[in-house]
Length: 215
Image 1 (cartoon, helix red, strand yellow):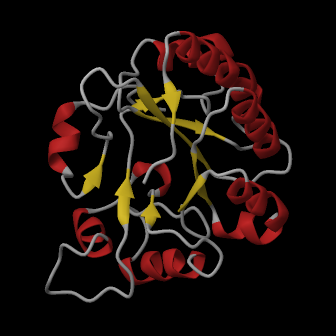
Image 2 (tube, rainbow, N blue to C red):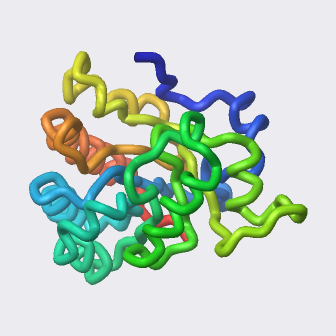
C-alpha cells in the first residue's frame, strides 16, 4: 500500500482544479479536519462526540449508500453545524471507472447529500473528470458543478500496520495553518481513529488552533 502522508507540491501543481489546502490569514491558527466514508453507526457518532467536546467543526465526505442506510446520523452531522460533501454513492475509483458511470454515481449522491463539495474516493480522479466536475471544461456539459476537495495531510488511519499514536503523529508532525486533514469514520479505520482523533484535537487546541468546516 503506497500513500504519502504529506501531499507533495508537484501533485498539487498537476491538479490545480482541486483544493488541497485552505487559504488563511497570516498567523491565523485554523485546521480543517475532514472525515471520509461515513456515516457509520459507531464511528460517526464517536467523531461527533469528540468534536463537540472540543468545540470543533469539521467536514464529512459521505458515501451516498451510507447516508441512505443511516439518515439519522447524517442529520445529526448537519444539526451540529458541520459541513458535508459528496464522496460518490458507491465509493468508485475514478481511475478505474468509465466516465459516464463515475459521473452518474456522483449525481446519484446529490439526491441525499446537498453539497457542492466533492472528494474523489481514494483521491483518484482523472484530469478530464476533475475539469468536468469543477466546470472548467467548457467543451463538455455537466449537470452540476463541484468544488473538488483533496487534502495536504493524511492521518493514514486506514493503514492496519500503524498504531493510533503513529496516526496522530502523522497529523501533528505535518499539519500547518490551513491544512486539510483526512481521518476516516469507517469500520476499518475506527480502531486507530478513535485514539488518534482526540489526541489531535487536544494537541492543536492547546496550541491555540480552532477547527472549521470547509466552505
